[in-house]
Length: 198
Image (cartoon, rainbow, N blue to C red; front, side):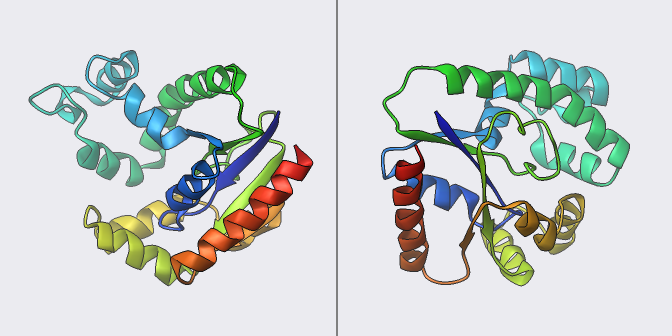
């Protein structure tokens, strides 16, 4: 089974590109979605996080206070490493389960924001697809979502590798700096290529 690792910086449009591939009938495994699932109330990973970072990272209803935790980990590299050490093995396990599940999809897409920064998926993906756009567009898009301030976005970007590093690792690149139609066209072309490779 051909597995494509889809990555890009925050606000680059990874989720939109993944959705466009899904529209072609391709199975998508998104590590961000998995992380949200693993940190839902009552999940073991959430208990582990609370035991390391304290119960004040939980809201009154027992769910994760994501903005508070995000502030904590992006301000401190050691805290971020602790969080990654808890979450990443759990995420990796779920990815492996999903990739070995039977499916009629001709190839699979695994969305990993930190694919280039980690070697954890080197033995999982066959090709790296980078979604790229100028940094000012990344910031504008994330600001438009309304959940983060610019200083927080820049802090997240500082923990990710830069555009050049990502592009150097890419087997394929999608440029997401224009209208949706142009993006969809690039996905269609790559879909044909991946069908041939699969």
